[in-house]
Image (cartoon, rainbow, N blue to C red; front, side, top):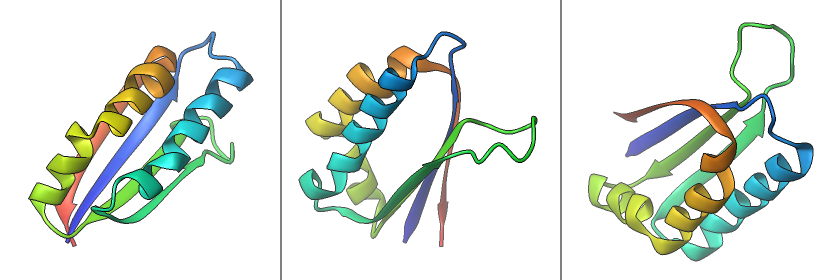
Length: 97
């Protein structure tokens, strides 16, 4: 199984409405992309200053399934119209579990 993990740091001017809209877009993806096996994300709880604003974790059976997700029009739109405009910094990692 492939685990895809992304950490987001929002821009200083990202509004709560923009963040909520981006999260709403992300929450729609599992219903639209059947290759997703597990999908969760959440905002940082603010316990420490040295953290990122949000984490996303998604599992896929194969690399091909992950590639389908990455290239899927719904995912591309969620990124282009949801997260990307308010993302200052981002890190990703894919690993086998």
